[in-house]
Image 1 (tube, helix red, strand yellow):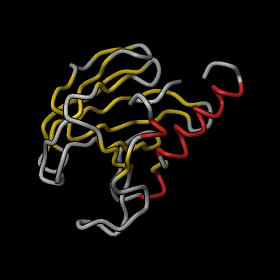
Image 2 (tube, helix red, strand yellow):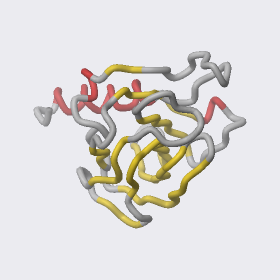
Image 3 (tube, one colour):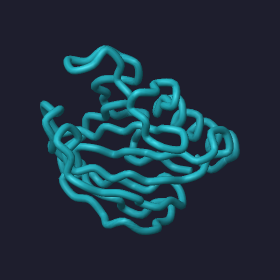
Image 4 (cartoon, helix red, strand yellow):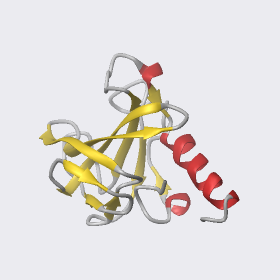
Length: 147
């Protein structure tokens, strides 16, 4: 497992999981502040199951993959400038490039959220903190000599 953006731990953050935002009292993911055009990588073997340009999130990919701890997860990467088509991808493949698309953005960044099984915006408990999830993956890789 890898992180969707290079230098994950060093990237600036915008809104974090659970924080109050200008549009919601609970942010469902993490915003990573990166220049437009930054490569977004598949964190592991996964499948893009849905893509589109949505009013709030702009160009978005939905991908599914399995996690030992959480089972089937759906990740949403939003505000992208470029997106790859639906299909199967292996770890490290480029899924898109960061951007500044959609109504809920004030500058180039990528929003990432993770949900168990399916995206249900009304069920906050179904969402997993991306910082915790990918931070744990980095820690496991370091401890196993992979990082």
